[in-house]
Image (cartoon, rainbow, N blue to C red; front, top):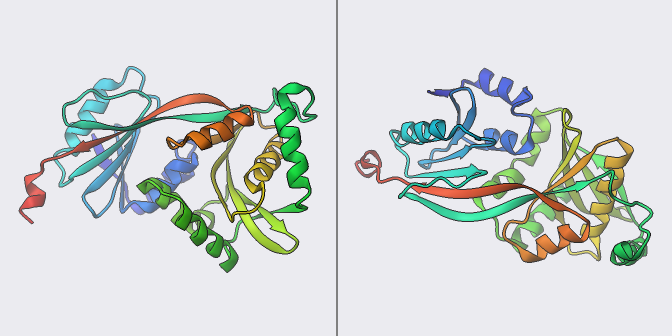
Length: 279
């Protein structure tokens, strides 16, 4: 059964282990209404007749997914975005893209960068060391952060939930005690930042967003700083997110010894809803 949450329930769900994952927190903040189906699957609805549903780890629960979609189809919706590890086979469900969530095994990463395997990374590290970047930890968005954010947005194409994640950063830090930013400075000038969050139970450090100006090797510098922080704080995996269908981004992740760990399929269900047309 689909159950809509009130404000208190929504906040409790965000604070619980189930909603601790950064993506679900951002969805819940960006949506106009949050619901949960059979106390298992989160559903996020907006006032533009669209819903996002996240079927993580559905396993043998495919019957539940069908029931959930059937219940959602009775609402005045025109589009349901479906995120799941397996494809749902229905005539009115269209495949948008298939992606992989990339992770780096911290224990297996050689921070001494020895051997031919790390020859390229050794060169990259020497290059960004010449830039004399340095980092700080922060949780407050300033005008400098917003300027970098606007420049970053102008350079990239984003899916709808990518925009939601980025545009709700300030609210995320105000409403949640977990997570922070690793900020990069050139002298005293902020030039970029990575958003960091954690799965404490699984000892996974998550890097969902990298936002920066076009500075030499800044993305590589941030990656190296993330790896060092993860090791120093005894995390086992560094989750560096999806490729978003970008081959260049895939090569960047693989260069840092990242491996595809979780398959993610994004589909779209288009509804022919008379309730909407009659408005």
